[in-house]
Amino acid sequence: HPAPTPPPFHLPATPVIPAPPPPPAPPAHPASPALPSTVTAPPLHLQKRGMTHDRQGLVRLLFGVRQVEGDSSYEPDPAFDLSAIEAQLAIVDLCQRIHKVPELKIIDGLWNCWPMLLKTFQAQHGKPYPTYALHQAMPAFLQQAPRWVHDHVGFAEDGAVLWVLADFRVEFDTHSSGRQIQPYMDAWEAAVDRVNREVAKAFRGADQ
Image 1 (cartoon, rainbow, N blue to C red):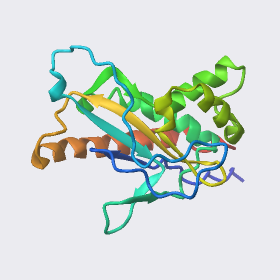
Image 2: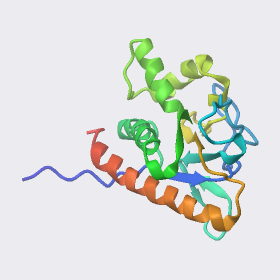
Image 3: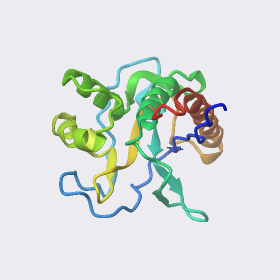
């Protein structure tokens, strides 16, 4: 008999502009930084690239949350489990793919996705990424990670990663009117959905 097909894999990712406050969460694990009351954008060192600063904007991908039905707030998505091998592979691959999508107008080199730093950290310490020991790896990583990383991750009471935030500086004026912004955000939604399907296909069953 053929081997059973692994269940569908999906990495919850929501493009937002402007950034919403982090979703409500249980008290932070003692070994983990407390959830920030507001999310602070990391320092992005801008260079002249043919577009003035005020024509640039910030789009954020919020992994691990879903919008509350009938509300503008967000809540943790139980489908998100970064301790899973396939999720760790997928989130790095999604960040690498999404910044190359031309219609999103992401400025090369001006985007942050901290799981990529975790991958580098693990390699520098002779440890694997993805890792089955993410819970143990995170405290050591956060001790050496840039300060902005602490504002881009949320933890459940048991220390599990609850949500992840990635930042993308874009050549688009995010202070434009809603009528101008909506087609651009629709392009983001479509790109994230498309890339998510590609990533899911690539890494489905990686935990097997």
